[in-house]
Picture 1: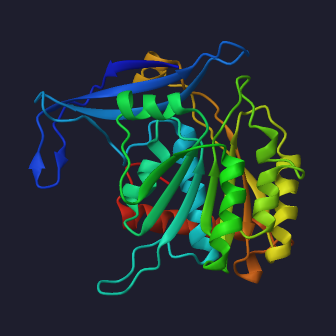
Picture 2: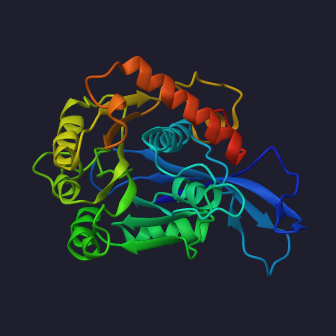
Length: 315
């Protein structure tokens, strides 16, 4: 793992709480160069605030998702949940709000789980990361930190999922997580098969109730991957818990030769593909109904979430 740092063009000191912190802002890039395998992937990019005072710790700007695919990942998960009827949007003043529970398999630099925990005050995020050195890099160099609503466990993601359905279902009969996000790769840049095949352990956990009804599982793949098999595997696993729908989205971002991230880290252009499967939700949105209607609803809900949360990009 290699961490690269570059000064960000925006250097206005951000506020933290009620005070403005005199600081420097930097882009941090986490690159994976395995001893074996052919990948040379930028695993994550974060925007980090480095206070000028030596006794103050730096922190990750959780509302900033620098990469196009991370914006698409967060957007499609939240828009799909809201379309299905999950309590994504903030409740009215004084109204009790049901917690959302997210499981992120794969940490990287921690930008996506940090975004959920910061943007949605009723969201609890569990992160599972196989490699302890990734967790160490995220905390020591990428600005990531845990909190009471953002927790990291070092272990295999499939083992964690199977353990969860074996322990937590006694108290969570409707399922455990509202969303399961898979953003994990092997040394060759492939999502491990245990996370997306019918025979894999994650499919078994999904069939046993890892996902709540009105929930969503989303998997990030590189652009060249055929998504037919992972969509079928997750759809079949969820079918025992109600109607389900599978679809995909692809990030399209024209290369920007002037963009900071393109210049610093070589990122940009057409992006990753995200396989999405739903569990339950309104019958009129189930498979077999017009895809155009579902897409329109996703766009409507994305616009509502963007407005309600003050999102920094166009969802």
